[in-house]
Amino acid sequence: MTQGAGTWADAQGIAEELRELTPPVLGALVRRFGQFDACEDAVQDSLLAAVQAWPGQGRPDNPKGWLLTVASRRMIDEVRSEHARRRREHEQAVVTGPPAEVGPESEHDDSLALLFLCCHPSLSGPSQVALTLRAVGGLTTAQIAAAFLVPEPTMAQRISRAKQAIKASGARFEMPGPAERTERLGIVLHVLYLIFNEGYTATTGADLTAPVLSGEAIRLTRWLYRLLPRDSEVAGLLALMLLTDARRDARSDPEGGLIPLDEQDRSRWDQDRIAEGVALISAALPAGRPGPYQVQAAIAAVHDEAESVDATDWRQVLGLYDLLEQLTPGPVVSLNRAVALAMVAGPAAGLDALRELEADARLGGHHRLHSTRAHLLEMSGDLAGALASYAEAASRATSLPERRYLAGRAARLGGSREFSAEM
Image (tube, rainbow, N blue to C red):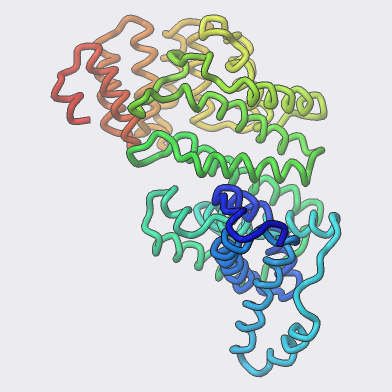
């Protein structure tokens, strides 16, 4: 041990190091034993053992080797209890000991293969998210359940079903070929994007954000960027996360209430994150054909570099949304474009664009369509229409801070106090 008992008891430090070690340890174990589901359980056991042992005993000289040894022993104990046809194979594992350390190149490939496996196309989106957070992120089932506001047994079942689905699909722990790798990387980026978005603006519950999720998404995307530093969309996604998360502290008041972008104190934005994000996207955009994450990051950079809402280059924002609609057309992109159009051509133009979206079943009942309409109606001077739209948006919002904010906007326009209190 590098430090004596009781001298390395920083729980946060232990947790961060264990999360960094989870992918290479699990990758080495799966490469040796070939059973992803059992290996993932064994790694979780080794992480728990470390949490219990390291604060009192001190950090081991070789933390990764320590985890590999403990996890390998768990696997050997597991396979000894299986059918006799597997006993001889794993008796050899007992003789040879835990998996050997691997070089940077092997670890690089193992880590990517592990991430691709957790985001296998046979899994549903929620299962991909949950399995990535546990197997690659090193979060416990309880932590993931708490972040998503679901009971721990529910999340445990989701993760268990995901591992069984991977087993049933016959997916192998290996790097896919070039064509499949491109497709699978797109899924991986989408999963990380979903994790970040849920953490930055929680869709349900009393809290506006779930920092454990957005923080983990940034950490995992940094890790992926280290593995694939030449991929411009990976760089774009990391830039987007940093540029967006830079506004976190300014997004809520001391009581946890929502503060929209146009009302935020920009002096509270994290300038270090903005500088890092701008540098990433500035380097990525000239490298090739821009992808959707790069374009979104460019939009975020325009907002972050403006000293005020009025100083924002809205024509550039509108042009970027035009490009984004070509790359990934969808109702949410069109909704955001309508706001940019209103800032350039006036609220009437934005409202006309919204009318085209009302027939889209994917967005027609969403509170953001109604809140955007309310904002544009208020800009146009139609306060009665704005009040009605704010009230409708508040009734549909599932996040309590968003509901309270929308109800407050309605109240300021003359809505009843009773309505505001009910929200």
